[in-house]
Length: 325
Image 1 (cartoon, rainbow, N blue to C red):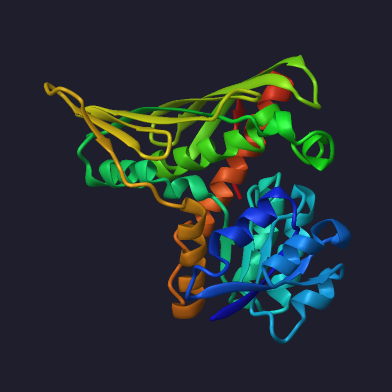
Image 2 (cartoon, helix red, strand yellow):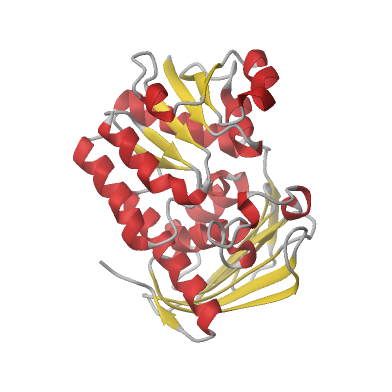
């Protein structure tokens, strides 16, 4: 059993603990780090966490074998580097960084230390998305021509104030939260992105924002994409891939549709799965066996590079090439 510490016990830090505590045979959380321990004391007691306010003390603790970060975005890179220097595997919530150059620092530190770097791109492990990836990889759709994606939820109406409403921590309206998951799906399905052209439209600023962000995307293969997210709307997920031989769509967590040229669309409703728990188990498997984490660091960097370009494009209202090393 791998003993881990969770750093950050806000809404999502708690969700990470709840996904595996007492359920996994490989991974458990024994320690937690919070700057407001009095607010999470009951949660820590319920889940058997030893609380601390000292990040450095916890990552150096001899019993702690791995670290999960659910902290404000601008803290990620330096915290990942500190964990890597302590010689411990690290799970980092997305985004890994807000610029590709910063993400490269985190990846290099983990590579040099020989430790696993995991990223919390849980939407890859929606049952619908796993089947979509398998379908694209099989070649059934032929040459990929175009990808469309949309993700929204109502979290922005429920989390009022704080760092998530700080444009330095979360630039680009809903891009840093929901939109980044779609961007990750695009990179996973269609490969590296060459150029983006994005726009942001805001009817009301945070808190409780009313805004949208949309981007036209050109992949290095020549395929195209359209990404959009609207904050303050009911939860909705769609990723749709079009190829020369057909199309396939992942809708929400479990609905999948495949249409081949000349045939009627075939719909499937897949068994439900906890995508966060599945990815955390993959992290534990990488630690135990040395197997690569299922999200390659090359794709982590591609996603951050695409994100950086979208934020710049929306700010300057012009097409921006994705930064390269």
